[in-house]
Length: 260
Image (cartoon, rainbow, N blue to C red; front, side, top):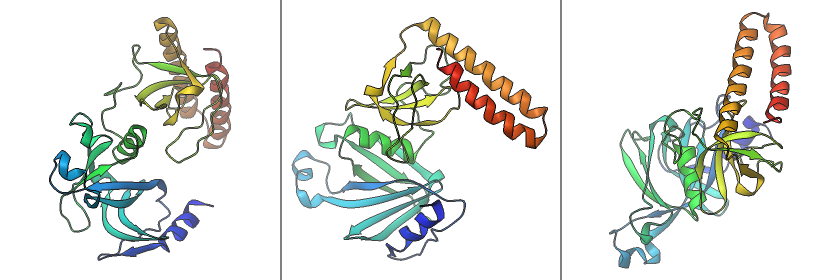
């Protein structure tokens, strides 16, 4: 199913509580969807154990829009919406077991032009981090706060090919080298592939860490040379030949990456 067809199918399941938001657009695509629990009421251990204080929500995150919905069978009532650029997240993991796997989502300017916050609880540590990284992709990660291309940044190499199972996951091939941006305790990593800067999640088991600082530095130098060569070639070729040479260079970069 293409992106537009997916949006058309999704829109048919939505019911807007108040202000209708146009979902279908050629410049929009779905990044992530799934259930979360909204936590409400006094933030004490005793009250949060009360089942009624957890309200099931279902989020639809697009590249430029968030829809907060309430699921009802195969239908979804849209409660709130916000531009993706106006989202902020805060991790609450260090505030006690009651808030395990919880985070705060703030809509700086929602559909009513108001700032609202949602205290959300995910099913696991990895689910929480994957939501936070998708909602606010420029947030500071555990290992890297600015550029991934630093000599001391942790790197891993793929030892088993993996095909992405969701839009926030990354398909990786044998010998791909990646910087690690996030790591969970339940078996997942988010990484950035060196040769094309693509980011996404994948399981620990398909990679191994590169321990050698010299090898990590060498990997960076090789990728920088590839990127410089691509940029130079792109500036000095006709757009038609550029398309062909760019494809060839990317293919070649896989070969070089495989020699790390």
